[in-house]
Amino acid sequence: MFVAHDSKQDLKFLHQIGIDCMALPGVIGAIDTVVLHQKWRDSNDARSLRTLLTDLGMEYRNLHNAGNDAMYTMRAMLGLASEDERKTMALQQGKLYVPLFRLGGSR
Image (cartoon, rainbow, N blue to C red; front, side, top):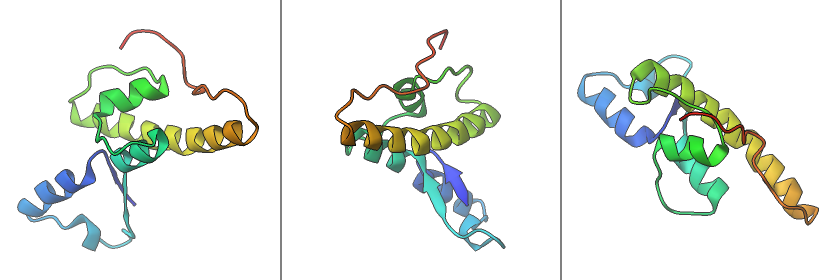
């Protein structure tokens, strides 16, 4: 899977420099954390990686660094997957939903 935050922009850029990620052997699709975040928040707004991590309550440092952004995007994807399930369960049980990752700390 190709995982990115705002994958359309990343795929467009990579295509411009001659890389077609979706045609690489073994790649079967793309996961876009912008889309996952929109679904989780019941919103059509495309939000930044910083906002997504903040919404999840995940700590982060030094964004806009390729290695850090890749790592935090993967964390966000996993966090959104688990939080979507937790949110659904809480709503079904009539409970207040609070993201599990509400850790606080520096941003």
